[in-house]
Length: 236
View 1 (cartoon, rainbow, N blue to C red):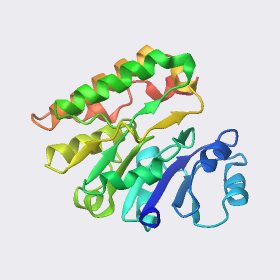
View 2: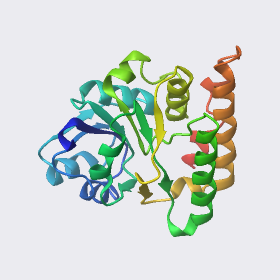
View 3: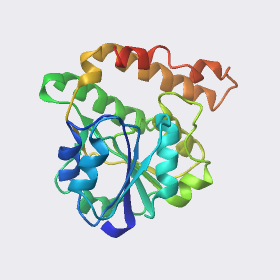
């Protein structure tokens, strides 16, 4: 089913990593890149993967970039990822196991320097999924095209956690969401964790809990429409 899959990624100055991302991507899988770079990222992509690739230049935020990429993609399944990871060997061949689902997400493993983080994060994903709360990461999640359209796509008013919000909304509306432990991606760069792994974990957990709560009781939207200092911390 490789020719029914489209990979959608936002990029911003990923020249140092994009080659390793591309190396793990089968030629028959469509790639859609929404790029806001001022480095060589788009040139590297064009040179390395000239076929079955579309690059859209846009300064959009991450949620809007995912929406732009989804609209441009042709696949029946839209796999959302990031340029700072690589897909595990056999990822795309195993994807067919989950063809009966509406949405699928898998683990993202940090480098060995942050093995503890991977253990905590992946364990949390498994537990949350068992309780009915899919904790998806934007580096490794897939949605059927028609399902994404049916729920209105990503919330572009969220500066962060737009990935988790989408999957929590899908589950809340009764779509078939599966956790796929054998569909893994591996981090190429733990730059965000180096700036505060515990803070990142607490930040994401708190925001996801509020998102899930907000689907059952009214909450002030300003609680989620501000990033709580996340991007300022990442860019330091």
